[in-house]
Amino acid sequence: FNNFLTYKWYFANAGKEAFSYTSSFKSNSYYVTMTEARAGRRIYCVITDANGYYIQTNTVILSMLSE
Image 1: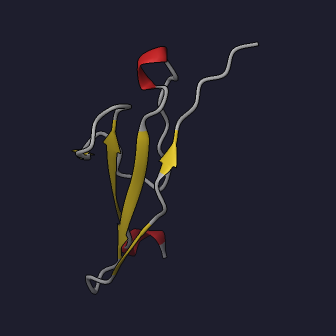
Image 2 (image 1 turned 180 degrees about the vertical axis):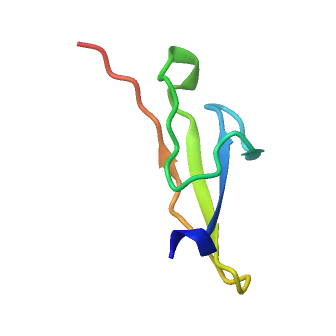
Image 3 (image 1 turned 90 degrees about the horizontal axis):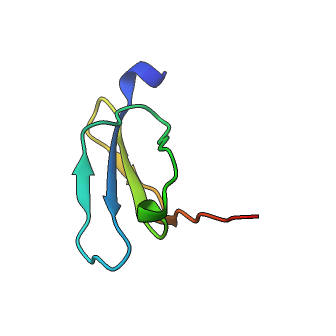
């Protein structure tokens, strides 16, 4: 089933309005090493099936917490 889906991830760093497409991530997961510069980054994904139907995820915000 997963072979019929494509994933396009978009991000906007804190303080930026426009989202950019990241071609680095094409799977169903978005993994980054968290850094202070990425704190507050907003991310969403557009998932498309073989027929061209798509759904967009809710936007999430990365947070970096220190102990």
